[in-house]
Image (tube, rainbow, N blue to C red; front, side, top):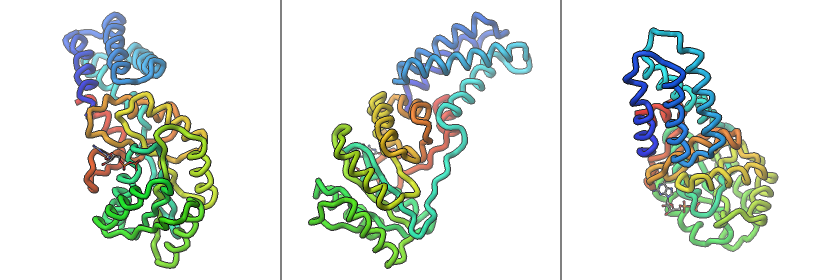
Length: 295
Ligand code: GDP
């Protein structure tokens, strides 16, 4: 994950690590390479510039301190800024309710259905909750079957009405059924499209209005780089979602989405998913991710 970014950052620090003193000149040279590494990782230029301007200001402000070496100082500053960029503290995920309703939204192929299964598994096994999965993709019968297979694998009930073409009605009925079955969390897997589409947005917005979810998670494929960020912006404008799920971090992803989404939409990344196996869902910790990037 993010190998190329890690390598480039490591090389950006190489020169300053060999210096005895931190100077305006070696700060400027390091910062320039960091900026290039971020842009190469698909971070938007404006964000990369703002990031490195902050790093530069902090390094200049602390350059009189001689207790740490220039290399250590720069790595520390960059790490702190990466943590801030990706969201600071760990985000809160709210699955309390009677039942709690969690709406899953995103483009087709982003990994929504797989994530819904992973989340149900996580809430069942790690949080001791009793989830109900809901197939609200009314356009792709295969999506319903896929969710049923996932539900079977993890021992979680799946609510579906294959003949019903009204996603709002399905969502309402599912919440009512969850209550009668004593399920305390409902995970609604909505329909996606290949691209942003007005009808899709309306449908998800209508489901939101009907079932008043505690959490609306926007699922996005991290491999799509800056497109991931643009899609996030469009979904957020319409749905005002509560958190982001970054999928496919196991692939050859450069890191741009992980680094920029929080900055652009001001919503935290709550989970990451790296693999198709149902136990690979992870809570997102900015601190750990920054540490991983810096090696
Ligand atoms: P949906 O259309 O948004 O519901 O997406 P799906 O859940 O059907 O996922 C689309 C494809 O991506 C499927 O082939 C999944 O197996 C795959 N997929 C989903 N999440 C991940 C992930 O974290 N890593 C990898 N490598 N593949 C994933």
